[in-house]
Image 1 (cartoon, one colour):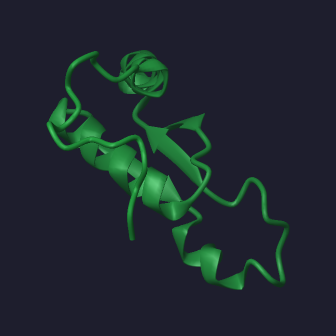
Image 2 (cartoon, rainbow, N blue to C red; image 1 turned 180 degrees about the vertical axis):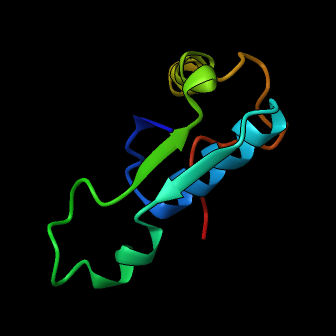
Length: 86
């Protein structure tokens, strides 16, 4: 297994793990059980995405493409007002 990426939080890690699974790459998210102890541990470097050695390059490429993606112009909803009303 190779460590290929450090997600910024558990949500991103789980989302990327699911994306890779959709592409046929089995990923393992290490350190997810440590997130609850953040007050006692350093906040950086707890999470890591690991994949089999043969899938490492393709997984890195998919994650890089995901992180570099831009929204499509004209893909906004019709009632988009530039402001999120809560």
